[in-house]
Length: 114
Length: 109
Image (cartoon, rainbow over all chains, first blue to last red; front, side, top):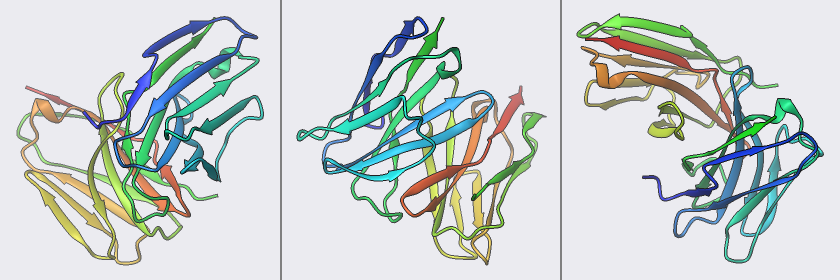
């Protein structure tokens, strides 16, 4: 158990809908990262927040957005869902924001878009 | 674009055999990590290597970081069925973790 929690574990929804994925970092960690894992693309970095502020952006679509709240939990919002958005979405956390710090991954949310 | 290429993609071996997984890039990384992931679960950090030429051992697993910090290898001695899983290397660069495509290892009893 990494100490990172994610909810829900599974999510099934239809195309065009909007969903919110939630992540709570390990106690004491200030950075939260979001990743998408699909069979054809592998594990791809989406976005990073540190202490409430966006720090780095990866291959995140405009239909996707995220935020980190004052209690440090984070939410990833996915809208206008398409079949291709079906994937595992992971949250990771670390103490700091630089390369020095190791990231610990949550168990993931499996999103299925039908 | 920074890329990490892992080889082989798939590996199926018998219990007791040795194996090596390679992770190569044309880019320099400040550190490199190896993860193991089981189906439906999140990646679990195995090791972080930081210094060029560094070698770290974790029981039967030996990790090496290339001198130029562009490549790494994972060697498993006397593989066991419990080693089965997806092994991922990931390079740290400017706050982002760049992942390789992974090596799917299957160890048969």
